[in-house]
Every structure is written in C-alpha cells, then in structure tokens.
Image 1 (spheres, rainbow, N blue to C red):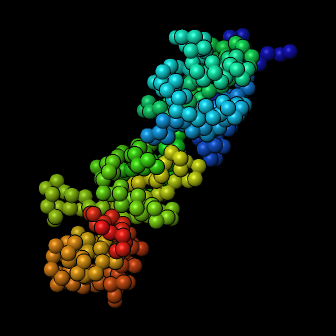
Image 2 (cartoon, helix red, strand yellow):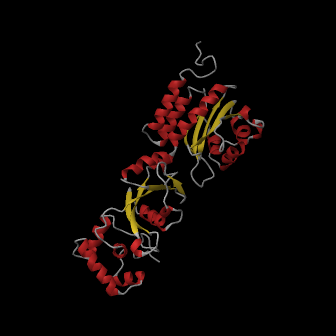
Length: 357
C-alpha cells in the first residue's frame, strides 16, 4: 500500500495542511464549526481515534470542550472536570508550546490519572497534547489526540502540531473573533471584553482604558444596560481632565455590544470607548440632569442627588428643552436616550426609580 508519509515521517501534503488550517482560522463559521473542521484536518497529521479541542473560560477551573469525538461518556465526564486542569498545569502544557506525547513526559504515564484511570482502560495506547496560546502568551486551552494503536505520533507529526497550534489557537480564540464585532463602532479608541464572571479581558487589536478598569462605575453601568437586553447599548461617561476641574471634563461614548451565542460561555459583552460625538451643546451639568431625567427622577429628586436647589434644576431643564427642541421633559428624555446622550449617574448606574437604593 502507498504510504501517506514522506521519507522523514512528515505527513504528505504538509504545505496544504498548513494552508487549510490557516484558512479555517481566517474563515467564517461558529466556534464549534471551526473547531470540528480543525479536528478533521488533523486526521492528516495523526491517525487519531479520539480528539478534543477545549478552552478555559476566564476565572474558571475546568475546560469547556468546543469539539470532541471518540471518547465514551465516562471519559468525557472526566475531561470536563477540574482535575484535568491540575494535570495540565502539572505537566507544563499551560506554560509550554511544545506538544507532549506519553513518552515525552518526565515521569511514567501511569502516574497521570487521566491516562491510567480513563484512557488506557478504554483501549488508547498513544496520544499527543499541546497547549493553545494567544500570540501574547495567554493560555487558551488544550488540543489532545489519542490513538488505539501504539507509536502513531512520530517526531515529525509532533513538530508539525507545534506549528499548527498557533493557527488552531487563532481559529478558536473567542476574543479574537470578537475583535471583528468591535469594528461596527467607528473610531473606537479602546475596548475590553467583559467575561460572564465579571473579569475584564483584553480585546485583540485595541488598548484598554482607565474607565474600563475592573469594578469601575462604567463597567457596572455597562452590565446593567446589557441586562436590559438588546444587541447594543450606548451611553456617555465623564472623562476627568488633568486638573480635575469640572470645566476641564470631557465625555467619551461607551458602547456595549452583546456577543454571539456560541461564545457566551467565554464572554458576556464587548465594551468600547469612542469619541462622544455631537452633544447638542449640552454642558456636563445639563447632561447629568438629563441622565437623571431619563431614569425618571423628579425635580426634587434631581436636586437632592446633585445637591443643588430646585430652581437650579428647573433652569437646567429649561436649557435642555431648548437644546433638544423638545416641548416636554418626557420627549426630551426620549430624544436624549435615542441620541445616546444618557450619562449614568454615579451610585445609580442604569437603575430605574423603583430600583435605586
């Protein structure tokens, strides 16, 4: 029978495999679709009987499989457990980009519970695993291939997997796919990914921003707006000037984008910072008043929140109605929110009258 390996043990068509895997990384499709397509390509590198591509969500202690085949229910249950991450850290797969076979371990495979208690009893005799990393070195997850025949993973195949792992990581990195979504906001200057746990993750292609630091009022407001539903929310945030004086303050626009369903285990939203745009001549204080007006505050409540006299609030509202060409406070609130002129007030970000403390 003709061999599908060249004289050095490298799979025939290596250049084509590299091209196909890179194409999957750059192509369309859901996270699971890309992962399954990658596993199919890897059959050309290693004739595996079971394979697994998994990701580690932020602040979690167990991987989540995005593509998996060939394992029985008992093995799958174990692979989804926290103990697997402990083993990954023990053997160094979460730190090194070098793929490992059983014979490459610094200790006998029998000392690894996943192998000794699950894989070997199920009839697997060989395998290779490699960590998946972003270009910056952040650990994303794991690729593992297992065979029922012994000695199926050659040195050349292992080396090729090391090269392919970078493209595979690109294809299944949920944050990388979100960078495309961020392009819908023109002139976005900064951004982050908000994880379901509340952790702040980097958004590839954009720097972070001081207003988007973990636990900031802006991120609290973003989470509240996201919880209201809808694919997009936009509001203004105050950016204090270097001197901290009110007159030196400017505003930036914060846009909250919901993420596609296939990545919601790994990300809750993309939060972007861009120029504020047309503020219709409204002053910072008028924008504060307008934000509370949108939230349904009465003049008395606005005066109390801002620690000013009611007649001052009335004067601000008069100016707001003129600048927004609105005959009533209700219409002013509607027009302002539709125009993205809402500024969450510190302490009540995004809360309605009935829910504020």
